[in-house]
Image 1 (tube, rainbow, N blue to C red):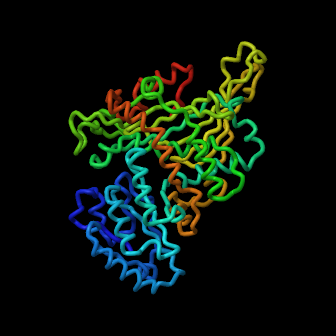
Image 2 (image 1 turned 45 degrees about the vertical axis):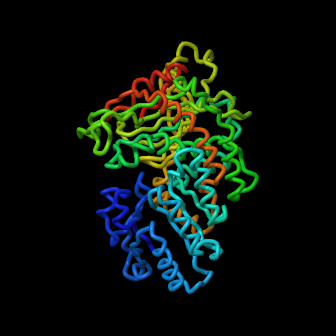
Image 3 (image 1 turned 135 degrees about the vertical axis):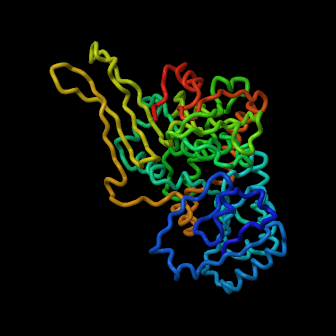
Length: 459
């Protein structure tokens, strides 16, 4: 059973979403993106459609929840075998109202196996996230709450865990003694796609850094869990969040660069600047790009910088995690040492799903010239099958009551505590570096990493 949003709430739903209609396959996201759904005629046939029911209701009216309760009871006949999940793929402003009404109609606790799935953004700062957590806990137990971050469902992201802990070859090198720096890139070529109502309040910080990027950092930096169970894994991720060095607002300019896209050319097409997007204030200071440097204060990662960058209207869409190792002693290779590249492990998440290792070999010939080559593992090339989509994995995990890939209450609040100083510093200064659409970001971001005698990977 799927509950839609009444026209009275139409201002909370994007124009693109309104056009889709209830007869189309797909689920409306929380306003910041749409679910990755594929249409498969072999599965979505008439027999399957008979199991679907679409109900339209004004989510602000309590009486509609009574109708929902009756409908669910009519379908399930209170059979505990039914796997009941409430998926709040709605604007976050409606979360408290929905949760209150679900609780009031006893649609939550009295059904022992009931679950609630909550899309990001989960609050807009640490204080609001804490309040939302308390509201959820009024109706659900913590083990019933699934705070979804679809990035954790991506196949290559999950492979970070297996790559590290399933191979004795790499884990001994996974520390400050061998790794020079780590770069995480989440680049998008699209703009805000008529979502100014969302982006003007979310910004790139709340949209990507507070959730997706911090989760990627945790996967790279976490210690091996005691057991391969959901709480052991989530405990180790939380330890990383708690170890991330707090940002000092007074020194924020040395650690963060924020920018906003101007008009330009992306994929051979002229595009408007952010200030010319529909619904955006002409004097808006909302950042659409951020580059930042994180440090983790623990024994394994002391003084190793984690560089992150993410933004809209960049040269192309690209998501990757790059682990760059330290340079080897160079005297052995004499005058040719300048040609050496650092060993690098790259987890490519988009556009291709692969893992590559860069190392140096001798170039053929009479000269002793080092040459960098790549050893590549490609998912499609090896397994000859399409990997499950991110949402496909996390939704199935929710059905199986596996919380491993979902955020926990303490994790959400700790992540907000990490980015809140960045948001506060931006709110005070609101200084932005401009960059042309179709570029790799503002020049200031290049200067930012260049100060550390390093450079961004080219995407």
